[in-house]
Image (tube, rainbow, N blue to C red; front, side, top):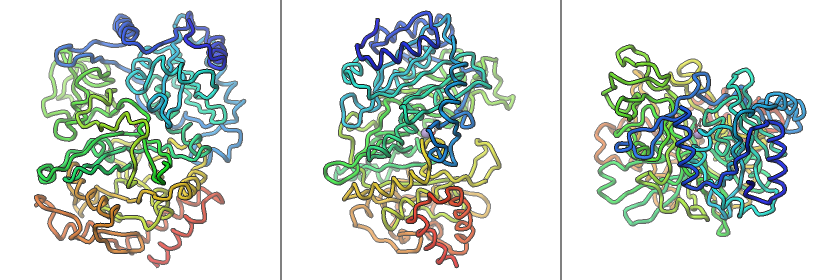
Length: 587
Ligand code: OXD
Ligand code: MN
């Protein structure tokens, strides 16, 4: 029975049901009884395996179709009316043309299955940030993941009332046919269509599809920002908590920074870090002229490999109960393992494909993109402000990438516009885990390349325009934890030690620490970074880490020019001006 009398919702669900022809439409209320019944059913149907209740209470295991283990950028579309509004970084197709393709694929795709109606909210229901969505899906796995990743439940029907203001999402695992896999956004209709995939980033529509691609368009129209950023609270020895947001491309340690553990010397002095978000931030100007942020999600969809008691104990601890593991190694005792968890791979386990696995074979047991879906509340350092409907005030925005050379450990932008420039030229070098040549530089502006729902240059203009809405804007920084020496050894240890850099950033935010002005921005003097207890970084190394070399930046500037050329006339003048300044510096 429908759990709402909202005509817009009822009409749309009927339209989708008429197209997909499920045997039954199930309106979910998000109750624990309902979810428990779905978990039982998923186990009966072999979709989930119940894990060891003593060691991993409330946890389940899932295997994907091996052809469906990652986001598919090549099959992800932004279908606005005009191609120029989608821009050069998105796939585009005319809405009517795409709708005809989708109609054929969805036609009768749920016959013999149920269609679940998931009511969900991105951010706290009823908060000034909240946006509501409905995802219709034939996948119980998707329902159970959405129940962790979003605020799902019947209070969404109540909060929405009769309003048409909700995001429509239609998902079907269909036949899992990769040739007919589509992840499509119609920003002008606030709708998302995802078919033939059940992988998280493609199928949990609240996350990348809604909270980034559609929300970036809503933010443009309504005067706020939807960003691919973590949110971290840093508590100093006086007890003051300062909040920062940070955007990094993948494989740059974003989750580790979001759950940072201070090094011993800092812990003893009383420093502490609090996680508000690990992936997405929605930022709005507050009445006090500052920028305020919430994490619109309710859980972590984290990469499992590499997560260990050493690299990120908080993330590991987050997965110890009520978590769904996807494509990791399944151990005989009903627990899980993945590469990088520890140095003791199990010898009697099954790999992510369900085959007996021999760790000595050289084949990885967990898929490199295997995941855990864990409630944020499980995290030992989850911020007490996690559910604050007003969000947290942001003092600094940090951009970063993986760069072996050229880019210093940290610098501060000279102004808001210069900070937007810094974000627009962000890039990262490929690791062995990514497609393409190792070391090849991929520009990923604001880490939003696959997630911006409109023309990237219009998005930069929107960022520039935001300055007029915030009288007390965050300061903008760029960091690079990945500088190496000639032999490829990292010059900076990273992980918890990054707090030393964050301390300088916090000092800059309250004007209590020095810097040198360079054409790139403000750089710390070596003495501005506290190295106490960090013998592995000699003073000379730090000096190198915080220096800039115009000769090295010459090639960089040429590359930025090529990057910018893609955006044509839409490139904002303020960014052209910043590039010109750099050009005159490098000569
Ligand atoms: C993610 C991503 O999964 O950015 O968070 O790809
Ligand atoms: Mn992400």
